Length: 278
Image (cartoon, rainbow, N blue to C red; front, side, top):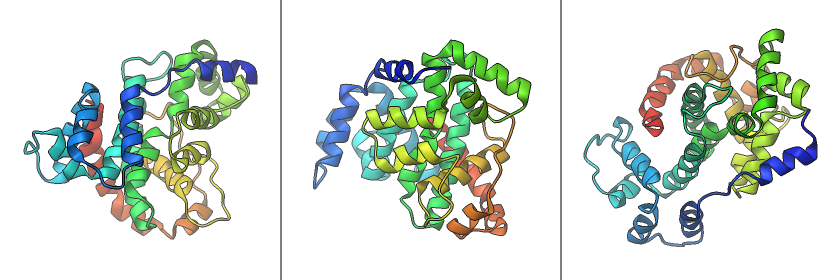
């Protein structure tokens, strides 16, 4: 078990977001009108972020592959909401690169996250929620697993062993072995980094969204996670698929025929957005 004190100390030891990322987010969030020249000068200080924005702007999803040569043009193509969420997402990917897993296949987990993000984007449009916010929430929904693997690796090795031995979902293994789960850990860290409340709450509730409420981001991420697993996109960290509650479909006003119609679109979006992992 990890005590609450140990957990909080471990979270306190996680480095904050880089000054460049904080500066970019503050500029976006506090500007009535965005001067893209100033935004470009801020973003370009972070090479990894610059590369991901250019890669995404040049993906076939936006219809201009190879045509976007400047960061300023990329910002104009993607739009300010997409840039804000891409800045957040890129910062997380820099902290947990695909080759840094200790007990987890992080490359597979990031691919699963991209699949979840793609599905969340499609579902959010269906229920008139912010598509870009949904994409980022989907991309970061399992960030708690990465944090536990990186900062509590010995205990997380026990989680992996318990999960295999008992053939259960990772959440159950985490609760049994360390006394908390990746949902809560991800929420705590995302909140400490001052990420938007829609993202922090969907991280916390994506395996247990409220079942008597109007559609919110946690419902979208719950279903998106299940669809990404069902499509076999990446590696969620266990071979099982959580049970899909009928209440979630009712809240989202979506049925299996509509879901089936969107599966090919979700796969195509996930393929397009895989450029984020480059």
